[in-house]
Image 1 (cartoon, helix red, strand yellow):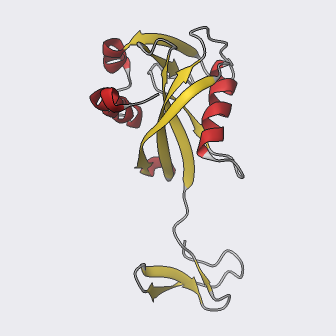
Image 2 (tube, rainbow, N blue to C red):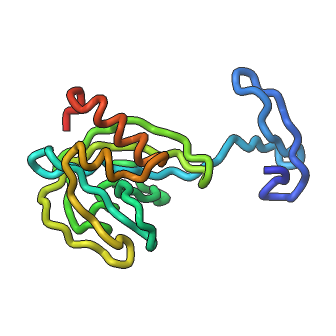
Length: 166
């Protein structure tokens, strides 16, 4: 950000103790700390916790995790429930936060969760999801989009699964 969103004046860098140089508007006396989007992604498990759900979206032939942006006024836990219900038509019966990662391409902080769904039956919203399919852990590892953030999250989950308490 180079200009103040309120008055349009050019921002200067102001050294703030323990924060470093932060964009600042001397006219409005306002600091502009970094802003970014927030989204969730989910390692979705069947009730038996032996299969992982992967989806395809937007006409792309690649398997990814169910994900979505956190809406204003919503917390991450509400978002995982809403996104799973909207895209797959399922309820989450338990969940555990796993880890986060910054995704520079969309300026988004991604929060990853492991979730257990109430059923393997899927009611896909065709406007949001092209295809959804259950995979064994090994199949999911092989089928996830390579070199993607979804793959990073999945591999982290598989490496730490014994410690996950969903």
